[in-house]
Length: 546
Image (cartoon, helix red, strand yellow):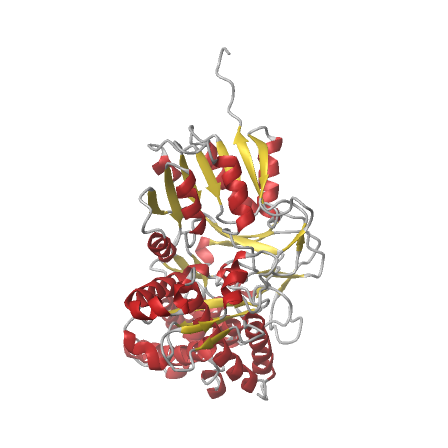
């Protein structure tokens, strides 16, 4: 069906459907798949089927694909867009040109037009299953459009690909799936559309270089790409790891500067990284403001949203500014650093600490005095001989506190960059073991040989993942206490904890952090009515015969 201008063909429900109902099955025999999961490999297969004409087992589908395809519109203007958007457009144009040349050399008689069409078909329509490493073209399935709030999802099984309703769907309603949490600039460059509605697509990727060009001679420069949310928060925390590591290296080389300057202040490496983020954000924000003048309405919308996100990230005052002499030191006011220690004085804008940007949507830092005080109050005299497993250790601030309270800390994180930053921050602590571990992908049985008494859980916050994390924690027979960070701010954490309490596997023993005196504010403007964290005792079944 053709519905909603600009979205092309789509699938609509012929009748009302209930949640969990199977909407579509594409059998394996009807799929065109590449076992190597490469884009170019699937394009070669498509061109082979195309060359067979009516003899192809997928002749009607192949004919439909080439009849419907439109070559990508990569305007010269797109390649000149600021930052990651322009780099993506330029890279894709070069990539397409190279692949077309390779395809033409591999298929004698193939025109550049036909090769470009086949490449665009795979780019825009193929589905990729990461777990099974399979890329495929699927008849009918590929008519479904993207929606961040999709009403259906797909599953790959032995019999083929199944589409299932995520919620009730009314008759005549378009059936949609999610292409992933892609920012608008990637949707525009890769698919030719973007979305003006609220959602995860309202973000942008900011390239950050630790040093200004004139200071890159110091040899400790590092770059990272940070995802900036529409409210100014930073989502991709792991990317900060390389910047933090390089900042510490740079500071270590500048001893004479540190001895006489403000870089002696606590967490000076954070201030250096914060300055880099602000500097790069200002430059790119100015470039996006210029792009708002575009006659392309899509580019105009992208420029407006990108500039707005960067404006939310940028300090409103002049707390961060380079040394007037041009040297490597930063001129940072004392209250700029001191404000990092106070929950009430830590706005999202104009903060001297990097912490407000480290957590998705602006969660509070985990090392503030109130949090510190509560942990010490409940653990001093209890934990000196115990081992704690910290699940989600990030930059190591809580790791350091735990290492002061416990005999041994096992710090886990899925990102090696964060583990490296953690290790360097806590280099003077000798009771911390650092392990790369993804809670949903890796095997928890590796901890079976350790006597772990307490788990500090601060990893993913969605309900299903937290439920799985709690289940895995309970499989460790020596664990007696689990501390849940972000209990108040994250509904998924709270629901999972309540579920295990209701099942009788956990028993709450203490609330921690913010919320003792009533609702407390998050940096994204929300007022949180629940306590910041909760500690729960593990309830074990009584021994048989007791």
